[in-house]
Amino acid sequence: MDKIVVEGGGRLVGRIPISGAKNAALPLLAAALLPTGPSTFKNVPQLADVRTMGKLLRMLGWTVDEGGKSKTDLTIAPPTGKKKPKLEAPYDLVKTMRASVLVLGPLVARYGRARVSLPGGCAIGARPIDQHLKGLQALGATVTLDHGYVEVTAKRLKGATIVLDMPTVTGCENLIMAAALAKGRTVIENAAREPEVEELATVLNKMGAKIKGAGSPLITIEGVDELLPIEHAIMPDRIEAGTFAVAAAMTKGDVLLDGARPEHLEAVIAKLRASGVTVAAEAGGVRVRSNGDLTAVDIITQPHPGFPTDMQAQFMVMACIAKGQSVIREMIFENRYMHVPELGRMGADIHIDGRVAVVKGGMKLTGASVMATDLRASASLILAGLVASGKTEVLRVYHLDRGYEAIEKKLKAVGAKIKRARQ
Image 1 (tube, one colour):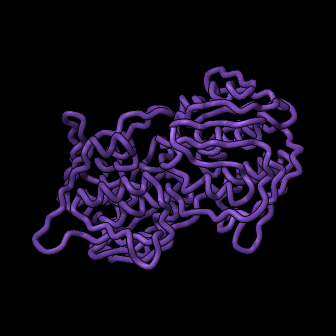
Image 2 (cartoon, rainbow, N blue to C red):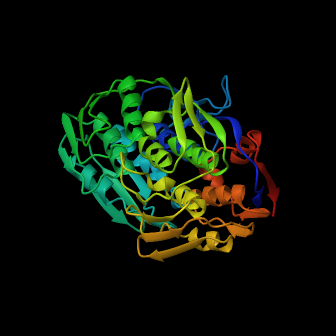
Image 3 (cartoon, helix red, strand yellow):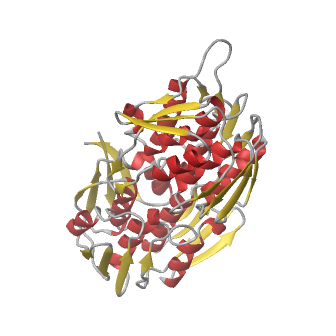
């Protein structure tokens, strides 16, 4: 098992290329189940979750070619000849990556049946799929729960109005893919507005779907009979960009986030600027500069376009060294403060009361052995190590590899003293 070793004190200066977005790649790979021929995706991030999705697609009967002109190209082709799709996502895969449930909508839409293991909860809190199933039932599907699996069947889905109880991202993505091949018009109200949802709609429209309103709370889909294969470059990862932006801010750095899109980072940029950080859009990316004089800011995580929950842990670390007191309210997940005890081992002063964290700023962090509990917690501990005195060892970095591509190499290239080692 690997660990990440960080020695604090280095100033980050230079250019960091931003990889393709994990949270866009996973639904797009699931969408490759819909067209009649092979689709090619470019700028695919080299991540554990992407490899898991590829493994699932192969189990379903699709061919996943990881070659091509670039290692970031991925071509996905449907079964041919007498080979039939399997239409089942087993527990062994779904338990390792909740996004496996994204195959549910495409399989039902195209083949009339899907059987997918229930994902259950995860380390950061329960994330049920009730909105996915409610929406599929509204489209005319029959839903059966049996021995930990959900089986969904429909001769052909039919358009309907679906009002989501909450703007769930994966739920909205599943329903958009299902409705793309449904008969008639589907309207999704209270839809998730994340850029990744908009990216999925863009790709489906390139395939021949008729989707309007993605990126807004109201999405309209006119069902079509067939979708065609496409080629598409995946959008840059806004959370990876935000993480490196915080790293630059904390280390008095000057970093160009190559490929980052400022329109996807508005809430994060606003908080960075409020902290005293200079952030400017440049040709091809976003530049982040800091003199190290950081001011405390308060944060409330909210669905997009609010402040993203996936950036909460990173800003909490920055709050530890900023001047003043920060109050952070985590309103998305009920158990997303598991990194707090580990930061405490490094000298952070953070008090938790339910969903509220009060962070005392101006602390001098010191290196320690710490354990990652989830993906974004892993990143926060590396950020803490960048500014801590001495050496920090971040253990259980398999969480990190689910969502950050070669983070230690990217940070080392701009001046960080960081390496990957065996435990």
